[in-house]
Image (cartoon, rainbow, N blue to C red; front, side):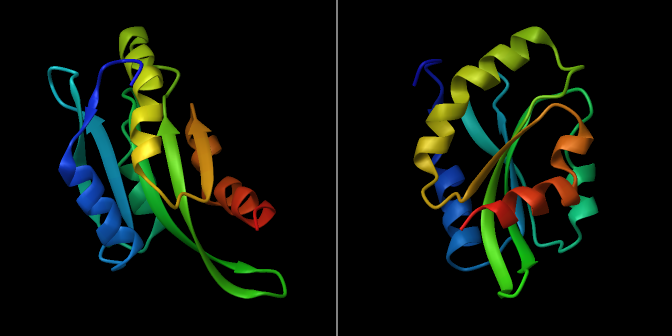
Length: 138
């Protein structure tokens, strides 16, 4: 933990609920107000990818997990768990630094992530972009 930020137990519980029970479609994580702990900000079972994108703030960093379902060419339906580091260009420098240094602590605690995406604007987390990255995987 380079930044000294801890991962709240609810983060792991929510991730397991998404991964194993398919209770959620996506989870958005944030830092608590004192910047000492990674917490669950929102969980959702909304299937529409645009709903997910609209939950990413324009000027603040977040992390997210998305249970991405797609059609693999010649291979039928697939699901991949996508980890997104959202760090928009307009976010404050201090927030970007804390989020960047805390990312590994969160990522290490989430076993089973298939694709990782770092987004600085909405085009880098668009459905088409994520679909392309997911298709290039296994």
